[in-house]
Length: 295
Image (spheres, rainbow, N blue to C red):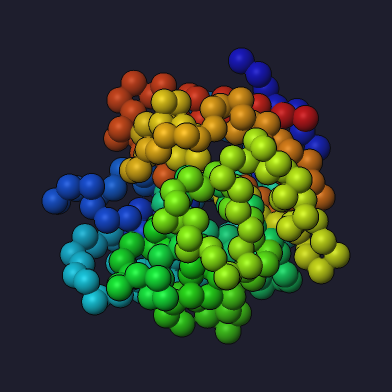
């Protein structure tokens, strides 16, 4: 078992929100809200020698939704975004490096808002999917976990995209998506200025450096959706997808990103302990984070 030694002062913050996901079955709440507990139980804080920054408790999950209602749990997500942004900012102001444990991908809005309040930041978005649904490419919006990148780049209702009058939280040209594999998702990025690399092991770091290491940026955030891993490696996500990274490849990619100047924080999302009965996939994710954050 490796123990992290690091120049970064790490702080783990739980963001156990499932507000951005549709119910996996009628009457069932998405289980990703349990992810921080499972990762902690698998020894994450001890492995990476992080301080405990506590948790930001989300509002109640409401499953009822109909097309035309707008973003599922939208007002609750807006409130949660502000609370999460404040806590991420506190960690950074204390000189620590936030490691945020989701929850679903909609927690991106809180992290992005925290950074936007202090400057202009880029985004390394590791995901098998674009999470870029908006009314410009879809007949309706629905669950923010499939829309968070669109929302973070200013596409959507003001109450989610323009908090504090700071739309967009991240500009298109400051984003690189690494690992997206669906052809339809890739088409969503046409004419946007958002960079993307389907196989991040083939030139992903070089592309990321061009996007994220620039004089006009104050740094960048790293978002990791667990489904960036191949479905043969990790299945405890809502949409496991073949063709992704193995554990070694993800560690290599994340280490490369963290070696770039300006890394401001990292978050992990979408892992669902309800789909991991023996806890082996939580242990794998803890191994990946420990190896990633080791010097």
